[in-house]
View (cartoon, helix red, strand yellow):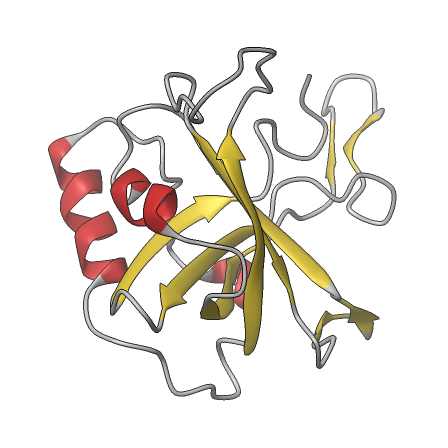
Length: 163
């Protein structure tokens, strides 16, 4: 049922998509319900999307990556426990400012808003995306309790079956 939610990826570039994105991150923490699974957790790491070898303060020219620990290990799909989650943004995406200000130990709410579904090449029948094997392509909404702000983004630079 969750796969049917109308969620646009964080990297969409139309003004309508930007409006939808702003609506998705507006307000506070969501009240977990039967349609949108959420779990409280903590930030474990904040850094540039691409690792750099430079010394000094982190540079976010390539975007931002934030990792989370979900102590209750929620079972978002098919009983598979999620002990960790991650959101990756490219540079200049809505919410990067919130992500860059997060610190290890910050309390967050992580909600699963979209996930990949199995896909096949219509011509060859070859599997393009098998979420049981390729875990990329989950999209999370993250609410930071300290900053009272939220953002939305994918868990990887590529979706299930991508590069």
